[in-house]
Image (cartoon, rainbow, N blue to C red):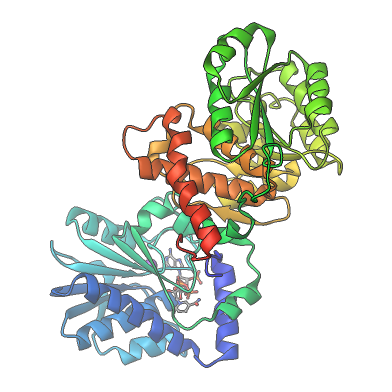
Length: 509
Ligand SMILES: NC(=O)C1=CN([C@@H]2O[C@H](COP(=O)(O)OP(=O)(O)OC[C@H]3O[C@@H](n4cnc5c(N)ncnc54)[C@H](OP(=O)(O)O)[C@@H]3O)[C@@H](O)[C@H]2O)[C@@H](O)CC1
Ligand SMILES: [K+]
């Protein structure tokens, strides 16, 4: 796999293991890193005349000295502006010694429009807010609209969280990182600060990365292709999974129907909308292939479960917050069985704002149905206020801690959705699009998750696949998208996934 995400600490460990295993020494890895950046600069700006390289005191700066030397060798007018000097005897000191361009103090740095700037101030070792000189360098680049190439990370951004460590950070056109992506490249606002992200192979092998044992991945088909459901030739509709979606009352039925339609398009063989009596008529008018059944309370839900044994439920979209919803959740978790799953969204999450522990305890019982929770940032804070309010944690850490507390899968939504499993695995989604910021889009996502769960996909993989497919469908559809379009927009995405699954071509990244 090459989709592992390494924290800066894990990357430093990979670096150490790679050096211990050989064949590359530390300075050779640094030369490889600098060469990768220089190649990227020359490829993108073959006519670059003047390049400024900003070098910090650590190994990020070391990479910068290599870049400056190689660009100068290639005939570019390269200048070096240093903040601090590398420690004697370090790899960075050797890289600086090999670079014959005289380093000038960063305070004198003054780029002009058309120049290129290489930001090699700080990378994985950023430990405090940037100095006034570094902040001033950022402002000069911004004012002169300079194209910045960041080495490893835009200086000022934490590789761990994606947040600026102080108030300022570089905004790069291109960021060249090494071996694997770090959380800060994919979590906002780091992702925007990186510009285009290039991952360069500098000689740290896949076996070295595997030895680190990261449980965090970039979301994509490579992560869940193996368990993606494809119907067998001898299947029938209930073997393809039966999804049950709870409708709200007469005035709020649309969200559940969107979810139900998405579950059907997502491959569930049968979908039933469970509607309160007062909304049966309005639901009946709008449904064709989706079945309809009256369910007014938890007793009705238990009877339906005993009768039809659905494999996955969606509860929350448009349902209304309160005791009735909580009773349904307990009825499902306690009686549907551990082979079934519940996707709890929207009002389903908010209903537990005052009593989250009751949900966590019930979900933790071994015989309980599997729970998948799909909060956006506001809903997340309602259920996990302590975790949400801890500014030291990244979104990745927050989702992981929440999943452990919930005993279920958490899909922490946003432009950088994080999917976390209670077993510690996590994925950061990177194909998100602002097109998804439209009413009803979350209801569709819940339906897709339920469809995949109903077809037997394990919960973490189902949630990851649904998040990716949902965003991919929106991207392919393009501007003008509304939630009603999404279920149909899934078709080309599904077609490619299924084709790839059956021919083993691995065509989707
Ligand atoms: N790992 C790998 O595989 C490879 C890694 N490589 C490269 O190494 C980079 C990591 O290097 P690194 O660990 O030396 O950290 P780096 O970011 O240079 O900074 C550390 C220095 O800066 C200082 N300092 C920190 N913040 C500061 C601030 N705001 N203002 C002022 N000073 C500040 C800090 O001081 P301290 O915290 O100790 O007080 C320390 O002196 C990585 O990003 C990649 O580019 C490649 O060569 C190839 C292989
Ligand atoms: K940098």
